[in-house]
Image 1 (cartoon, one colour):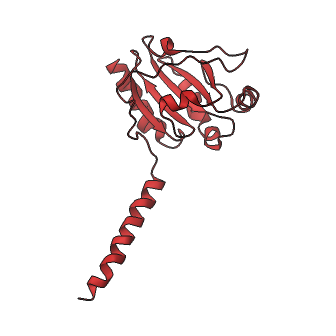
Image 2 (cartoon, one colour):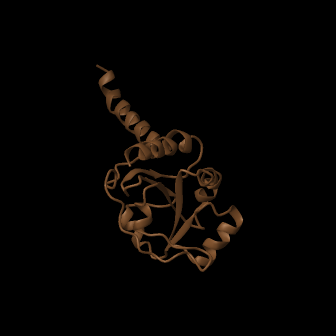
Image 3 (cartoon, helix red, strand yellow):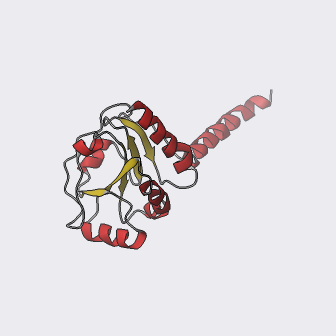
Amino acid sequence: MRWLYLLPAILFAGLVAVFALSLVQPSATGPSPLLDKPAPKLMLPGLDAKTTAFGSKDLASGHVTVLNFWASWCVPCRAEAPALEQLAARKDIALYGLVYKDTPEKARAFLDETGNPYRSIDLDADGRAGIDWGITGVPETFVIDGRGIVRLHYEGPLVGSALTDIVLPAISRARDEG
């Protein structure tokens, strides 16, 4: 009968463990409402005079696209720079960047420091495009098939096995489906 007194403590410990694991686990493909739907419309300016803008037409132009939301003030964005360089080296995708709630000057300084892997970069200075895409912060990455359909929404930096275990398989699926 004494074990009944321990039952609330055991249940509480179990809830704490589940909560702690949810904080530690990367949120690879959260329940994004965009999955398997057309990518939201984009009509933003390019980052600066050195950069060309991209738009909705580019996201549905027959090739797989990887769209990465980032900012100069984002520490994890620095950590994912090597993975983005790996993606940029691939000839079968287009890698686009979308600068989120930042200034062109700070974003350009970031690129000068970490390298620029992007084919084109748009500036979402006020964060409105981020709302349309359903992002909750940066970095976040989307894989879009050749018809402009979102196939993956990855929340978090592309570090560790995120690139090889999550993003690259999604690129392969997007190529097959699009």
